[in-house]
Image (cartoon, rainbow, N blue to C red; front, side):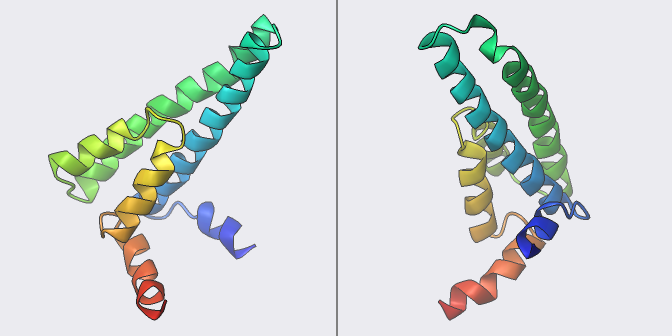
Length: 119
């Protein structure tokens, strides 16, 4: 339950970024499953809804990434990596983990630091 409450906490730029990054990854997986149904099983209409939802979430991710970059003062390299991470499936999760580990996601990085030292 703690994990769910953390995921839906949108009180800071880093937490909003995390939420949209996870959402983008989930819609990517849904689209990949729908593409299997379309191309392998022949259900042409299978990608209509997942494709539209993923497209909307992709645009939201790009906007949230740009807003987060400004608010957290990311340099161009980090901003570029955030934007490029939306292209491969699950790339946004990889960027979110990397950004958290390397201190680019503000308070998320601070929360993770003591755990990393203890491990």
